[in-house]
Length: 165
Image 1 (cartoon, helix red, strand yellow):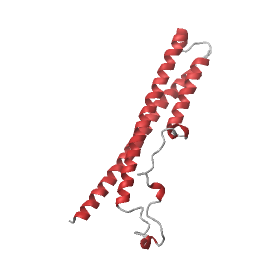
Image 2 (cartoon, helix red, strand yellow):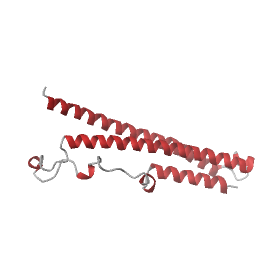
Image 3 (cartoon, rainbow, N blue to C red):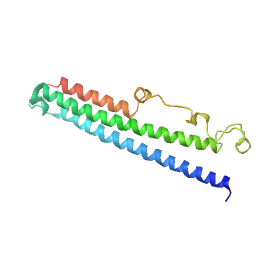
Image 4 (tube, rainbow, N blue to C red):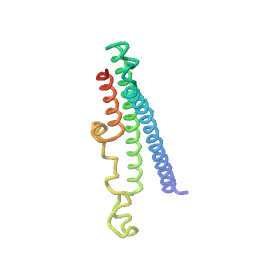
């Protein structure tokens, strides 16, 4: 096998591995999101379902109970967000690797595949070239996504703790 073929085989292997890693990280992010937000939703449900004649567990302890309940919710939200952000960063690293491999394989080269595609475009659109694009960390929170929903549920839980009777 020639050196060029060996390089292409290696690149294809790395490309496949990076795609599998992204798939794994997305699944893990989904599990973290589901786990944390299910717990928060259960907490919200418990606050809503409690009979008005009875009190919630934390309200028996006054303000200290509310503080402890709020800290528990904040800890759960913080843990979930930290892990979701880490997973996103790992995904971005893998996307960069995939993009670099695609560049080496000339998937963004308009001239190389013009005859095969019968048009003057590359195999991949130029917007897929992540090697030179870094996602801003603030966009994690400003777009509708798992992080935003986690923050919103946490915020609603804490409001319910402090404004419940």
